[in-house]
Amino acid sequence: MFEDKQELGRAAAAHAADCINRAIAERGTARILVATGASQFEFLDALTKATVDWSRVEMFHLDEYIGLSADHPASFCRYLLERLIRPTGITRYHLLAGDADPVEVCRRAGEAIRQAPIDCAFAGIGENGHLAFNDPPADFTTREPYLIVELDEACRRQQVGEGWFRTIDDVPTRAISISIQQILASREIVSVVPDARKAAAVKRCLKGPVSPDAPASILQTHANVTVYLDTASAALLSA
Image (cartoon, rainbow, N blue to C red; front, side):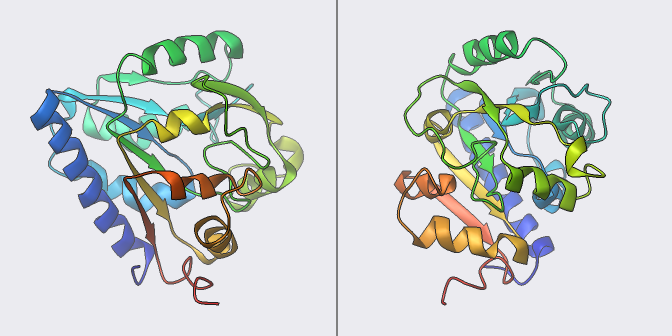
């Protein structure tokens, strides 16, 4: 637990860079799975400044809204291009095109991610406990790497609260999301969860039972996961 999200971001980035560098040292390349959203700002900023041979990194991402082009301010493709890909010079990346046929996007991304294990997955926890865009009740069983999902109201309201959309009516109702089982197939998971607005979800997912109604609770079952919290997001853990 860290005093603030800046300190948290630096610590999580150092951990993530170490994971990437170990994979490169052991296997010659590193395959990473990257989260987006306001909670990841400080972490990704620090990660882009870490010492990593980004030419040996292959990147996938968690999710994207169906119907948004990459030039939309809320597009996660745009987010990653601006906050990770261009700052680091990553050349091997697989973006989920929100304005393409979602079935075909899922198929292509699924084929690519199945080629080898993900070495390090970066993930957050949503205000409703979602993991990627797997809102409650999440599908814990499917082995499909990427899914077309319906976004619940709590998830959509979070996007408005973070400033990505003006009103809830502007938020798409469907998205492409990596599946729960594909996240769990990662060799290591680094979960970055700052802010008081995440405190209730953190308590439910880390201290409560593993349940599809609290999707990120499934992280309790992974053998190599580290959750980074600040004092605000951890505030309810002792309650």
